[in-house]
Length: 377
Image (cartoon, rainbow, N blue to C red; front, side, top):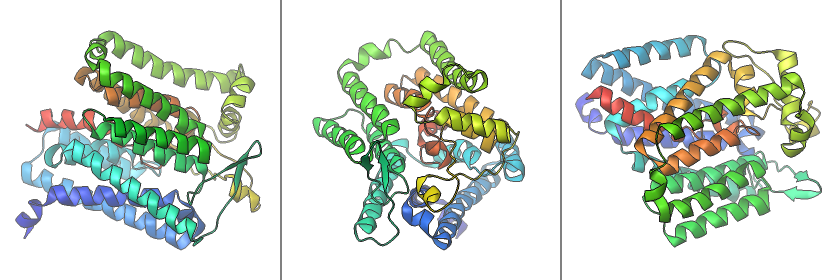
């Protein structure tokens, strides 16, 4: 019986990843945040899918034996389970790619996540149309922002942006109808959600993909040590300047006008809660919660959310993993994934939800899968 199940590990892994992505998507919908019992159920379903993957890892360790890499991963995971904050980031970065490297195909995995997001988004919009849960109004400068069943317009914008990114990763070469689809996504984000944090990255990606389609051979010639050095410097520079502004106060008002108060709330959180090694619980309240009497307080920027809420140790781990992913992507001359990774560096300035919800972990999978394939052979 066990042997029979092992023959279907790839299918089981794909199903578990689809369930995890779908439950995460539902958790950022109005359906997931309006009803506590449903939110609890979604959390349980999400954890169940992850624990099934953990059991597969354990079985493969027993079946194939340990090497230094696997033993290190196991120790890290035990440490994570025992001490880490409420995030599955270590599992997403270490164990899901380990499973995929031995059993799955990256293009198929991208396709499964893509269609899970598309079908999940259609489902959320449909139940919103029939008004099956509480609906909330959002506006900016007297402009109505539509969330269509997501708990915030930015969450819908993020989902549409991820759909566009996954489409790019699924295809070796994009066709004219793919670009039409990407343009429709950009228009939808801008016109309906007014989510600038999602609109600009996807627009830049669409333009970049058009250039890559015709000049990939020449662009790949730029992928070398110089680009690696520049990319790492750019990532560290963005992080440094974000903290410099809230610590020194220089430029904070000008930048805050552009990114809607992210710096002030980050400074408030830093002053009130400080930075911990392994994270702390902080109550986040967005517009519709504030309308019901809660104090409006958010930590939107990834560069403040992770060290303050998740903890400095997981944050440093994420940074190291991200730098490795960028370095490996440049080495493999994976131009599309490189552009997406660098766009997420900018996306992290005004937003944190992409990483905290776990929906964008796919950006790491290909580089780590190749690492594991070399180690496992």
